[in-house]
Length: 401
Length: 112
Image 1 (tube, one colour):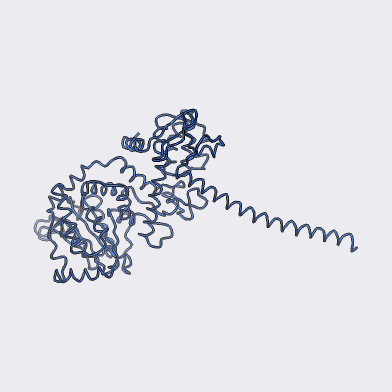
Image 2 (spheres, one colour):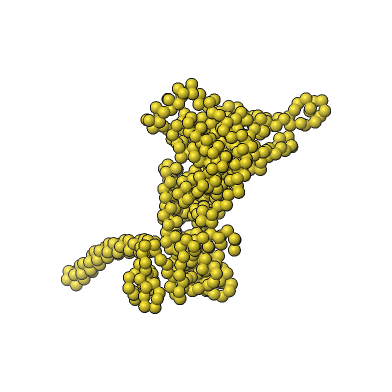
């Protein structure tokens, strides 16, 4: 194992030594730090430890080079982005901007992010989107960073931040309250660290080391199988024969009478953005780099934390459990795809048109909307080449417009 | 075509190869070798059911094909139940209308 892998594992151990329970969540949060401008969101009810986890991760990676902005206190633009240097303006008439410590710090914490005012949120959103901050007509580049945010969605003072803002967070993890034995462990830890878990947290990696690790992860080549799994999974949550993305009607109303109503797509109200696939790829590469391998199960487990804040489901009862159920269905769907040999059949059809194979592919398309989309693209080509007639295409058979 | 998509398809071909022979698409299920017919073509295909072909030797269905058949049988069962309910309702309606007709005939011819 390389030096940086060992350090990242040490970071995980140090966090786990101070944070009780939610192990699966800790693994994802640490993995998510292994790409540029990592942003993690922690959601939990009050008092479950979301701020503690945020500070532990930030301290472990950035030491003292961290600034936390809290939505619970009054935050002004000057404290987050920058303010005017008054003496320069008064003496020389020059608008000089003093950039805020938050913009310059490597470690950026956003406590109670749903209570930040919309103006502060807009500035932070811009920083996350473009890697820069603006104040008084001046711009400053923001170097690589780590953002860890937390919120309690049930908080009555919540501001409804726009979905694109949440989409900028790579992962969104949910913390659960502690089981009985975990509560005993927490008491032991609090005694050991004199009641302050965060102060005892060492900086495990310097930021330069973290950046070097991020460069190594970036160079990892993901195998085509996993890349295919990630893209198919993302597409499964997006695809809609009735184009829900641009439809005024949304599921379940939109799905009335649809052939695919029982499919995963019928349970997704607002589909995830392309960023879901990008983030899953980053996480899969990080896993391969850190553990030496990444398999289907790992990707599906990680998807649970990549999807919840960038999509909505129909008839939500418990978002995480609903998503877990949908991902389990995805696992079965992937196995079905394999047993149907649909991608090798698609490969054969891409090489050359074969009528009997086309008929077989159409039968598969009736079972799988993602496959159907690709087959439709081929049909367009075959129509132009006169190999198929319009009335026999999927568009005609399934009334797909 | 996008190179990475092609790489993905190639990886799937390596993982789960198929044999295309004439109108047949066939593959070997791990641990379940397919019966081979007289013309050397494996006979495990759902075409036997859908195209009303004569089965030769053993017919092997994949899990998804079994699922497909099971689902269609369930749907057919449901349709059968619906049809038998409709049948019963129509019988009652027909009997009622017949009785009504007879009653009206009786009123018309025998009570004048």
